[in-house]
Structures are given as structure tokens and as C-alpha cells.
Image 1 (tube, rainbow, N blue to C red):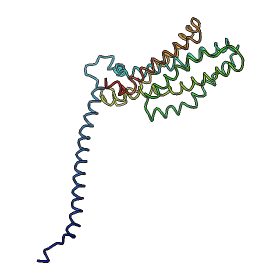
Image 2 (image 1 turned 90 degrees about the vertical axis):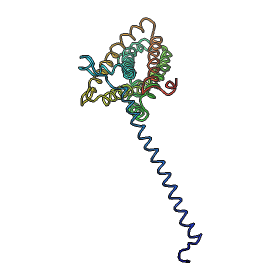
Image 3 (image 1 turned 135 degrees about the vertical axis):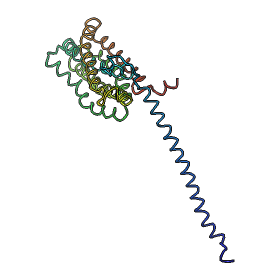
Image 4 (image 1 turned 180 degrees about the horizontal axis):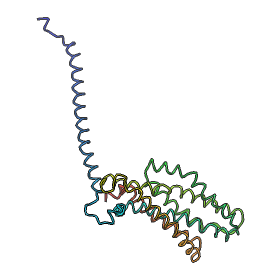
Length: 278
């Protein structure tokens, strides 16, 4: 009989590992169940998101010939194009007004006015890649909202420059440098956001957009909008400068940046959480 008896101490040593193993198996089973549930929910979320980018059948000939036209109904893409238009308008506004303002304030000739652009372009040149890296890391929305919002006060501050000597020239150069920083920040979000939106349409409708997608059409459209900004900027800003003055002209350009920043906050990268709850 002794051969068939097991001491309590020995039995306890065997029971503990079995209980621990049972607990581990139970936990693993629950974890697998959670993973399965998550895996079941994730395709549903992706499917629902893709449905938002589905192109209905029966599109007219213009849309079938130029599929990018259908994407223009998306407010995210329209906001991205507005960012490109505003960016180009800003660049051409500086090109058109800095030489004439420098001549009026400091009696600068063409060479001296041209040297002022160093203050504007140098921050753009140095910080542009950094700003692009931040867009890659954090998305287009923070850069767009911050960049256009930041330009609002610094554009208004350009009215501080007054006729005078070296101190006033320094003030004007510092203000131009601050604006150059803002231009560097807004350089990337537009095309990144536009490419993201069109990429989702392409993924949801590979047959409609073709194997290569509508990216060449997108870049052509973006170039067209950018060129329109380069055209409108000098015409509008020049007319405003002559009629209401340099400071007030910059205030109107700042208002355009404010509108662009507000729309970027609402639409770029999708609606923010604070607006989704409403």
C-alpha cells in the first residue's frame, strides 16, 4: 500500500506547476480571443473607411477620362490645393513688393533690394528639410495649422519697418527672416496631403484609376494651382499696396493665411477629435 501512497509535500510540488500552467493556458486563451476579436474588427474598420473613397459606377465621360476630377469633391484635397495656392501667392507677393518697399523705405537700388531676399530665403533653405521631416513624422495637419497660423502675426508685423538707416534695415531683415521660417514650414503639407488623399482613392478603386493611379494628373493639377498663385499674388498684392498701403496689404494676406490655417485644422488629415464628438 505504501507504494501507492503519495506524501502531501510531494503532491503539493506537482499541483502548483499544474495550477500555474492552467492559469497560463487560460490567460493565453483569453489573449488569443482578444486578438481574434481585434482581427475581426480591424477589417471592418478598414472596409468602412474604403467605402468612403469608393467611386460609384456610371461616371460621365469627363470623369472617366480624367479620374482626378472625382477626387475634387473631397474637402481634404480641396484644402490641400488651397494651401498650394496660398503658398504660391505668398512667395510671389514677397517677390513683387519687397523691391518696391525697399526702394521707398531705404532708397535701395536693384542689387540692394535683391540682397534683402537672403534674409527671406535663408531660413526657407535651411529649415525646409527639417520641416519636411516633421511632416513625415507627425503628419501634414500640425505643420499646416502651425505654419499658416504663425504667418498671420509675422506678416502683420512687416508694417513696423519705417524709413531710416541701418537700424530700420535690420528690423526689416529680421521680420523677413521670421516670414522665411513660416514659408519653410508650409512648404511640404500641401503635396503630402494631396498625395495621401488620392492614394486612398486609388487603393479603393484600382480598376477605375488604373494600375499607375492618377498621380501625374494630381501633380499637373497641383502645378496649375501653384502657377495660378504665382500669377495672382503679384497682381492682387501690387494693386492692394498701391491702394491701401504696404501694411494693410500684408494684413489682408495674413487674413488669407488665417483662413487657410482654419480650414487645415478642420480638414487636413481628417476631422479632429474635438469636432467628431459634436
